[in-house]
Image (cartoon, rainbow, N blue to C red):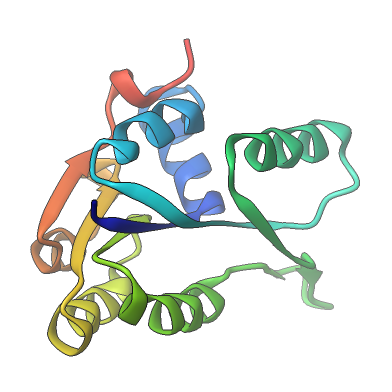
Length: 158
């Protein structure tokens, strides 16, 4: 059985599914779909810390599904801008784990991950599977992946 690792850019998936469909992503359905690829041996969901009870409940639900939830503080800059992305953290974790799995599953539409997906394939021999909202996913990322699954209504909460 193939060994599978999942990496979810939670903020990216949240905002792209809301923008494209006005609905939230169904992480249980994702888990079900990915389990057909092989044994899920590693699953990280990268999110922003929040005191909001709804966010804490969401993170608890992710843990109950099987995800390790990694949290980063939301940083509000003095100029009013904010920072809270996980790109570097996701990249480091993928590079650490890719040599020990057969398939890397990435949920994000961020084109910055195209080079990472190429590295996974070329340096570690792992297959890559990307999920993203097609209209909001960088073409470079879709092209880099061995398999791209567009997020549609089948992967959204009702």
